[in-house]
Structure formats: structure tokens, C-alpha cells
Image (cartoon, rainbow, N blue to C red):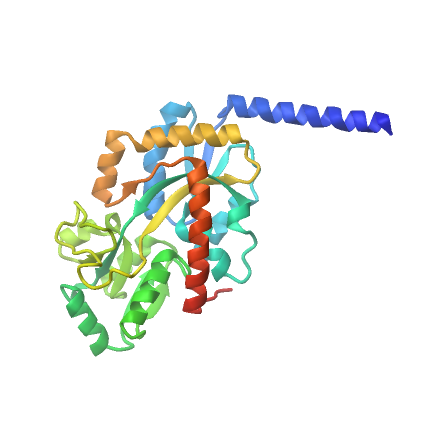
Length: 322
């Protein structure tokens, strides 16, 4: 019995030593970032920009891989099941970490326990984009919704995503007559808006700012506290009477649970440094987003707080998905 205990203890010590050594030498191979949405989403744009910055500071390639589907749950589940060896991480949006567990009846993981926070990446104020045929401003858009009750569509990058829930809340304020059409990603949603298949879409400024400038889409409101530099003529939600509408989104970086703390700390420091680079900040400004580097502990606390908010919001909205 004593011999068996000694053998187990010895094996445990070897495993611990192996993990510790691996964490100390991390990264010793390429890193994979899973984006649970299609190419062209805001998270995809941010991930690819930061991946280039981190290649030199980490000494390893950061490979961005898109795994879209099921409102981001497909990619999230993949990372939740991944080995905690410091090679696989999730680029997560708000809904992936603090909304979907209350929205989906059959979600195969609890985001708050399945992942270890690394850091937030960016805050993304939401812009209300509308097809020009619906109006030049929110007043005209509201009138069009009332006039064409039941005939207008709004899109999202997937059922249950924050843009979906935010547009659902706006639709309720306007009478609840619009139809929701989910897409695999933001890029497809914007294309549908351009073609007229959609009449409204809510997302980050960078998704359609070029189309606004070209007169193909109207930006009639933004959820930020002040107007965006990239869209100076677009009023804030507060200015158009939507100050209580919660619509902003964020993107963060998380790892599978049991990923070594040394790996989390090293990656946190590297990402925070990248998020403070002038070139990165300039690019973010053009996209209408704001860098949000924080310690992992700060992200952990905020996730708990926001989960409580969204649990109540989802219950009040009465929205559930299979």
C-alpha cells in the first residue's frame, strides 16, 4: 500500500514538473486563436491585427481560425474541450461568455467555469445601420417601421448574439414588428443590408463605415457616450432618445480551464503591450472600437457581474434557443 502511494506521488510530481517546465518555456510552438464567427467579424479583424503584433513579441506564430456556427457555440465548445496546454484560446464576444448559458437550453458547457480569463481586448460601441430606403435618421426610421409594420427585417451575426438581443430590444421599443434574420457572421449581414434584404443591422462602426461614406448605408445612432471620430455626424443613442438601450459589445481572450497560470500571465502581458501600440490604437480608432487591456482578475470579476445582468435580461425578454 505504501509502495503504491509512493509511486502515485512520484508520478504526480513528474506531471507537475512537466507542466511547470512547459509553462516556463511557453510558447514553444504556434498558438491557435479560435474565432467562433466567420471572417470579417469584428473579433476576426481584431484577432488578426493582434496576431501580427504578437508574432514578434512571443516568438511564435499566432494562427487565427474561424469556427462559426450556433451563435458562436460551435467554436466555444471546441475550445472548452481543448487541452489546457497553452496552444488553444478563444476570441470571445459578450454572448459567448455571459449570455449563451442563459439563452441556450442545450449548451454543453458553462462559459464561466469552462474558461480561464486572459484579458479583454476591445469595447465595441454598436452603430445602428439602416438601409437608405428606411430614412436618414432615427425619427424617419421609426416612422418607416410604423408605416411598414411586419414588412421589415433586421439581421445579426447569429441568434442569441449581443447584436441580436440589442436589436430585439430596439424592435420591442418600436412595436415589435420586425423580423429577425440570423447570418453566419457580420460580413454576410452587412451584404444583406446593402442588397436591401435587411433594413437594419447593429454592429461595430468598422463593419460598414465605408458604405456609410459611400452613401449606401445610413448610420443613425451609436451606443457610445460620445460620437465616434470615424462617424462624427452620427448621434449617440442618448441624443436620439435611446439612452437606456444596452447595445455595446466587447471581445475578450480566454483559455481552457486548467491552463497554467504562468501561461495566462505571459499572454496577458504580451496582449496588453500589443493593445497599447500606437499603430494598433490608430487602427482601432478607424474601426470605431476602443482597446480595453485589463488584468485577468479584473476580467474575471466583470464576467461575473455581467452574467448576472444578462441572466435577468434574457429572462425578461423571454428568448430561449435550442
